[in-house]
Length: 162
Image (cartoon, rainbow, N blue to C red; front, side):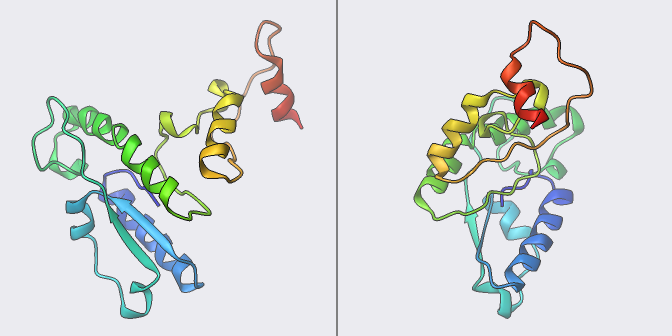
């Protein structure tokens, strides 16, 4: 699991991780060191099922040191936190390649993770991700609410209508 860097996302994601872990599944919960340290402690019966993976937040211009969550910044600075979150692409990709992940849950749309709104759907993204993860990648997002227009890529529309 790789939730957005806000406790309104981290806590519900951790609760979901606990529910999944109660069914006997192992979870890697990925976030920044300070955010992980601030999360509620796990009960002993779940601690062996949930592994916390700490990724250092990359330094970004206009983002103060030690900022790792939206609670640490005013609203107008969140854009720089988002930039730092996007810059976690390489360490997260390395983690995913080196681990045996069956599912990848995240609640913020990452342009680099290949999940796009259907209006931005690019079939090649999914082929790349399937090769990286060695798993089926299922697109999520808002469905298109308009009809096909003749000058657009017809394969996207055909795929969505099947």
